[in-house]
Structure formats: structure tokens, C-alpha cells
Amino acid sequence: MIFKVALVAASVLLASLAARRFGHAVGGLLGGLPMIAGPIIGFVLWQEPLDSARAIVLATLVCLPATIAHQTTFAWCATRWHWAMALLAANTVFLACGALLLALHLPPGGVIVLALAAPLLGLAAMPRLPLVPGRVAIPPIELTLRVLAAMAMAGLIIESAGAVPAALSGLLLALPITANVLPCFTLPVHGPAATVALLAGFVRGLLGFVAFFVALHVSLGALGTGAGFAVAWIVALGVAAAMYRLRRWRARAPA
View 1 (spheres, rainbow, N blue to C red):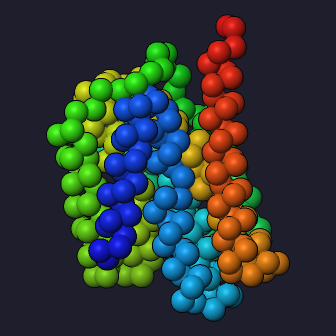
View 2 (tube, rainbow, N blue to C red):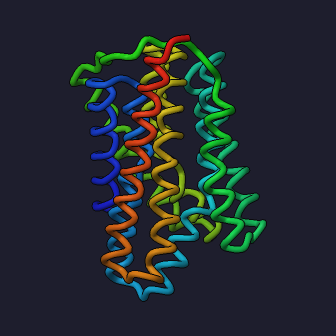
């Protein structure tokens, strides 16, 4: 538990620092990468047999479309509602979509195709609000509160997951903590456009997340644990870098 809470704190802090230096969209892009799940799956690979680890990797992808639905819902709600209402709506949609995906029992190929399509559909469904890119003023006290809120949420989820049925436990552990915490601080301070940019950045980062787990699932069988894990990270970071460059190119392109 301590390890996961520490990873959550580090993820929120790094995403917030990236937003402060490069803007909301870059903070979201960094937060969407497998900064929490990646190290955790690394320990799983170290401790579990290869077939078991591949099954866990595939199970991680099952709830990915629910995560995209969460972020798209939060973004649309942020254009009209208070952050608390947006938070409630987004998590309700996440739990409903996640429960449906688990109930469908999709084959591995279906899980992978749906996981690859979900971020692209999520980006297409995001609201379009104008925002001038640039640095974000995030004072130290807000950084501290962001990290503490994320740690508290992570601790609560981990404790609750052990006290509920297995299916609900899996959903709770898949809940996007960073994408719950950061928008709640961004919306009241920086407004709807900044919040949408942040959440769209999360969805772009989740392209790297999906690429990581799909590449890991494929490469584990062909390359083994160590090489497969390294290849997955290279693919994820390459996808994230490509998304960042594409976004900058579009921002500079004439209207």
C-alpha cells in the first residue's frame, strides 16, 4: 500500500510541475502515462509467472475505455457545473462503464481493439474551448494539497478494495486517481478551458498507457520479461512524444 500511495503522490506532483512549467495540456499528457501502473506491473512481472503476468496486463486494459469515459464526462461537466458535480458524474460513468466491460467478458483481441480505439474516440468527443498555452501559476500550498488529496484518495481506495466483492475491488483499483484530483483543483482556479485542456492531455497520455500495455502483452511472449518491459516503455514514451509534437505542430499551424 505504501508503495502505491507513494507512486500516486509522485505522479500528481510531476504532472502538476509539468503543468506549471509547460501548461495544462502537458501536465495532463504526463499524468495519463503509466507512471503508477507501469512500476506496479514491473513488480508483478518480477514476482509472477509469465502467463499470469500477461493475464494481469490484459485485465488492466479492460477498464481503459471506462477511464476515457470518465475524463470525457468530467470535461463536458466542467463546462457547466461545479467541480464536485463534475467529479460525481465522471465517477458514476466510470463505475457504470467499468461494470459493463467486466460483464461482457470480451476476448483478448476485442479488449485490445477497444482499448486502442477508446483514446481516439475520447479525443474526438472532447469539448473544444480556446485556451492560450503557457505556464500555469500553481503555488506551493496548492501543490501540497494536490499531493495530500491524491494520497488520501489512494489510501481510501486501497482499503475499500479489500472490503468489497472482487469485481468492484478491481474497478476501484482502476479508478483514475490523478485524473480525479487535478481537475478538481484546476476547474475552480483556472476555469473550464484549462480543465478541458488538462483532461484532453490525460487522454493523449492514455494513448501512451494503452501502447505500453499492448506492447507489453505482445512482447512478453516473444521477448521475455526484461526485454518486453523495456520495449513497452520505449513504445509508450515514443507515442507520448509523438502526441506532444503533433499538438505543438497543430498549435503553430495557421488557422
